[in-house]
Length: 219
Image: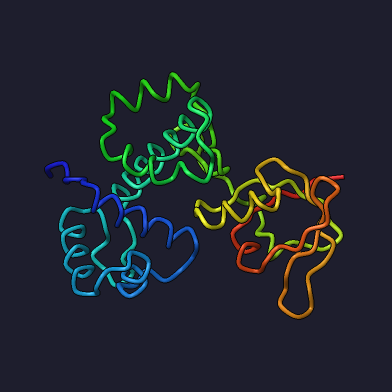
């Protein structure tokens, strides 16, 4: 079989399906259409092509094949390496790097990827705490969403979803990767998380809490 064409549009589909799998959502045409903000007919047409190329299973589930999964992880690794470079080497703000990395990932050849990875010292995680798959296979079994964490327990903030509005919100609150947090309780009315970071009392919205991942600090 010929190597399938991977262009920016296809990259977006593969990464979207990969994230839907990771978030344990049903990978229906409707969910993909919603995530990409595209019309159902255009999504159906692209999925047909991806299935013909052996990147998506020929089934209703729309799951990625082994080859499709490998491509998705490679694309995401390129993106996260560029995020690491932009923040660590060029001092870009962490909330501004996603869109730039999106453009750079699509023009990154295998040779450039290898050189960039070597230059950066093969980092395991991007600035948002997400895994760079080509250097470190993700292990999330010890991570928990803030929204599902246990009150009166101390955690380390390990990952924050790569969303500009969320990152801006977290920055304004003093929430960042590596910070320690004592989760005190959840508000009875709307499940706002109440906790302490850097000796500062915080109230973190339910929407943000569902996208902030923690690792429990063992006594």
